Each structure stands twice: as structure tokens, then as C-alpha cells.
Image 1: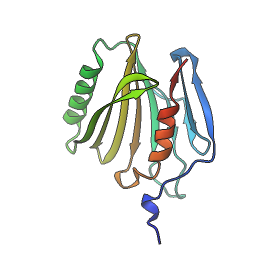
Image 2 (image 1 turned 45 degrees about the horizontal axis):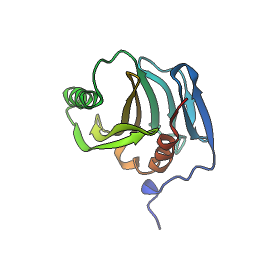
Image 3 (image 1 turned 180 degrees about the vertical axis):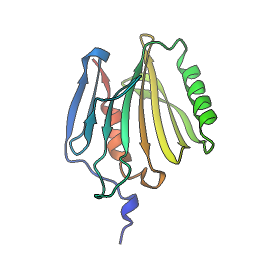
Image 4 (image 1 turned 120 degrees about the horizontal axis):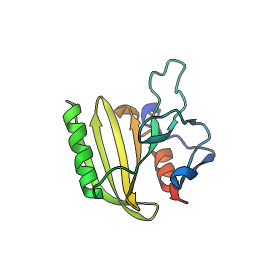
Length: 158
């Protein structure tokens, strides 16, 4: 019998989320919940469905935008890692690699912090920083990773 904790979820369909005020769009699974009641740089968040009625934690992917940062992409990644390292006693960097996001040069980091596993993909376009961040319990990280990767791949600038 397969281990349910590590099985991947195949999403049947996706909805489109357009954020014209930030010139971006992203697709998200129809089984996930869109939350616009976010704060600061986080502009929208998508939460996975509950895995059981007592599920205490919903995996989430957030889209963040910040026009106030005055640094390059490499410095942003360095500062982000330093900030998490400083505020989380259990910080462990697992991956830090160049990638692309919507055809632009980007950087991806994967790390453990605050008893959670994080994946962050960041880029800069026209002096504005954009990053997508996936947060999950470490033992459930793989379960929604395929859906999260599809969401990240669907991210586009308008």
C-alpha cells in the first residue's frame, strides 16, 4: 500500500487569478482557496484544501510584490536568507539555485524554518520585486509540490 503522506495530488482544473494593479496573473487549483485578505508585500494567497476535518495546517502559495526595495536580485536573496536565519533557530538552507520566472532571470531557495518547509522563487522586473512562496509542513511538502510547480509555471506578467 502506498504511503498517503507522500502521494502527489493531481489537480483536475485551475482558475485564473489576475492582479491588474500588479501586472501579473497566475493559475491556481480549483480545489484551493484564494485569499485576498493579506498584508504588506503579500498580495494574494492560495491555500490547499483540508486533508481532514481536523487538519490544523493548510499548505499555501503566496504572491508578493514590493516596489520599495532598492537592491539587485542577488542581494535580495542574501538579505532574505539572512533575515530568516536571524529569526528562526531551526533555519536550514536546502537549495539555492538560479532559475527563471515568467521568462525572467530568477532565483529559487528551499529551506526549513519554524518547523515548516519553504520554497521561494523571486525575480525583479522594472525595479519591482516579485516572489512566490510555498509553505508546507515538511512531511507534507511533496504532496502539493506538483500543483505548486504548475502554479509557479503559470505565473505571467501582463
